[in-house]
Image 1 (cartoon, rainbow, N blue to C red):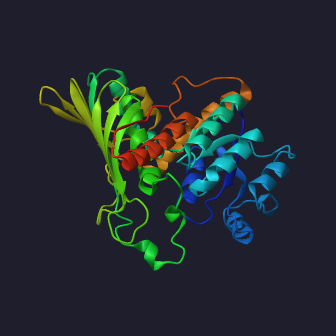
Image 2: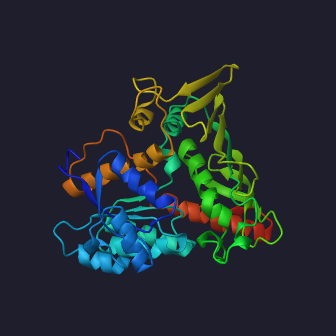
Image 3: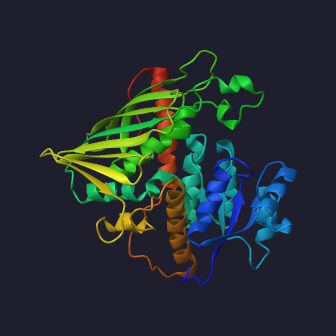
Length: 383
């Protein structure tokens, strides 16, 4: 904020009354880097206007469509300069394209798009525009995840040999779709798409790639529903090969009865391993070859790598979690957007927020898992 002398003007698309909208809006405000000035809160104009009023958006800047918003905001001296997109997955692509074409920086929920062709086109548009694009794989905003990444980069666990990723949830452990005439967008049928891979598999994949610094090169997948009467995938079991030859696994499901969240990674190298569980986010286990196990905790004061301290706001004893991790991505994006606007780079650390390229890799993961299941074979998933 200091370099710009004001908050960034943020428009929001989607997220009227669901879970993720408030998460984005609160995350944008935690570090006081944005003010929400406009929005398209719903595809239903009346619902969107009511939601805009509830969160304090001027009624004159509560729009019925993204096209209306962009046309009006570009005529204002105080018009929006960043847009946050939190619509159902199928609407990400159009909203991103229109926003970039209008010259706005973009913060978009994952997955990037619902097919690989659109993802590649969007990446090319971002490249040509020169604008900042942040994809909210929010788990990479946790301090101890960034600590793990820094430890890998520093060679503290040696050459990576195994990467094991879990994301085990239970919110679809019953046939919830049978109890409603409109079970929600997650159950929309799309060609060459997997519900569980798009919903949580992309998070697990990006977490492994972010911490290890490796690219996923091939996979073999078993994906599908785990109960009779379900038409979408709620389970994925994958064998993984990474760019340095490391092997690994991924287990993702949203139908494990009783499981709350279950996101974790175990990464093993030639000198030891790292283990992190999102349900205990302020702890990172470092298992060493000599048999010792060190549990590192999130704290300020020089105990962590600078990347981890950058993602830490409060002193030891006060836990930080999901909302703060989201806010870290918003803050990092704000640094990049401010540098783009002012032409002055004041940040000492390199940027680590997920970009449009990370989004393309996530969509490629989904397409590759679907292809592998169809062919019952290993498939290449490199870009």
